[in-house]
Picture (cartoon, rainbow, N blue to C red):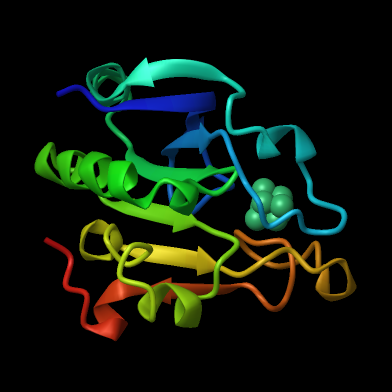
Length: 157
Ligand code: SF4
């Protein structure tokens, strides 16, 4: 059975969503509804363009960069994201994932944890305008953390 995703955007060769040049994939749908969200248009689960797993993998291979999964919040679709993340690893690329959930919420929820074994790092937590800091690397507010999965014993496979 094919797996499909609602994709808002795929940015090729970006340098703002993790280290090095990356292919950043923006998934539609988010129910965190952070105050002053940078992109409220991304909240709509039916937004964007419907794309198959195969189409996404082809673009990743074409660009030949490591990958960032963002949105929206990709963990609104943890089962599908786990399937995609495993395939991305299988073709040789590492993954950063941005989510509005905290790592504590993810680790205590078996569904949200499904993609973790396939990720290099998570940037966690909601955007909090009172914690906003434009000087932060790869994240918008000070509460958000860059967490490497190896440090949590989710060994990258
Ligand atoms: S998690 Fe991200 S996309 Fe979702 S509301 Fe917060 S800032 Fe916006």
